[in-house]
Image (cartoon, rainbow, N blue to C red; front, side):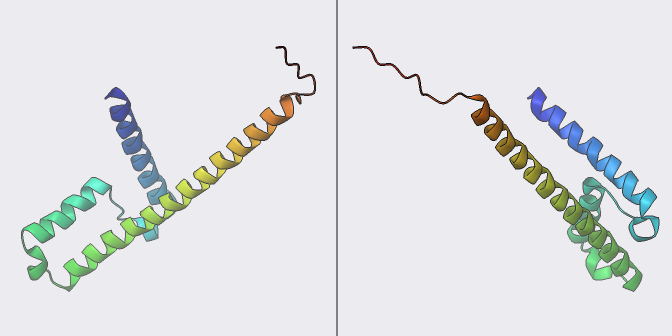
Length: 113
């Protein structure tokens, strides 16, 4: 359980760091980026309270911007995850090659009966 909690806390910390980094580097494009929890709350509020029927153009634009920014963040994380996975696979294959090179061939094989 503690492993799950620490993993979740690490995820939340990474999410916050990513959000702050995006806001600093790309302020004009990602200025109103929000966390997963904030976005979920915004969407649920609009859907559950039927606010979507009462939104004006500005409200729709704001909701669309939130969703668009969130999708950009998802795409960035997907690319990062793919790169990390690729790096891990490269490391694993490199470790296997190094291990195979370090293992001597079995030329001195003796069988006793």
